[in-house]
Image 1 (cartoon, rainbow, N blue to C red):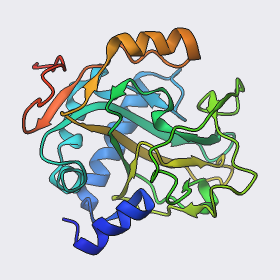
Image 2: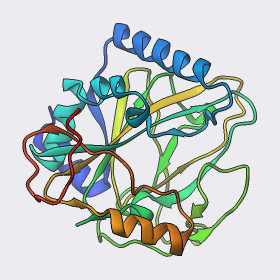
Image 3: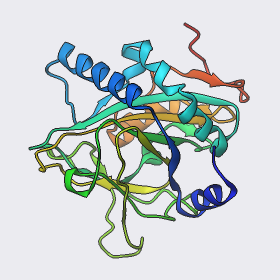
Image 4: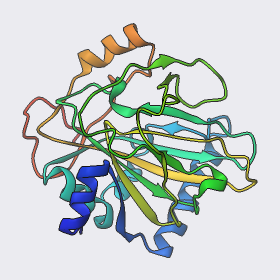
Length: 253
């Protein structure tokens, strides 16, 4: 799926837009499924609706689409666990911003090796608040100090100060519907609020190599110490290969 040049670019930048895309028919199916999901839960926060597969295992089908899984396989190997899923469906007005952050700041995976696939359900661009990344910020595998931002205007309460220019110039990840981006767990990224009048919907899956351990004790400790979402009960789905670590309690139904 990825050429040698594309793999080298991912290694350098910590993010790549895949050279393949989902079909228009699959995009239409995802839109219908997302709309049904939100219609069944009218009070849910559409800016960030997490843990989809644990609520409805039929979402797992989309995490295993060959276009996505083959791209992830090229980046982290053949033995892959899906452990997270979410919808980011920012409304056209009044949506929340995603502050600059690193995903791995509060993820209980050791060694901390995981990637996120961000699949565009709508066209996403600067105007409607596409994801922005700071290329290369993953390279040293350093988790920078975050501060707590308890605001109703953001989707995360962990934020990173980047205004001093130490991380370089942001890159906007604009995607047509059906295209997807993959980024590293250490990469600094965020997104502006959406006030364009156009919805900005994306579907996210989190993948880890099965050589890593999803540490539930660490997850509970992070809740106590950092006041972050509790990930300790997340289900783990082996979608390729074997559980190499032998420590992960894989969901089999």
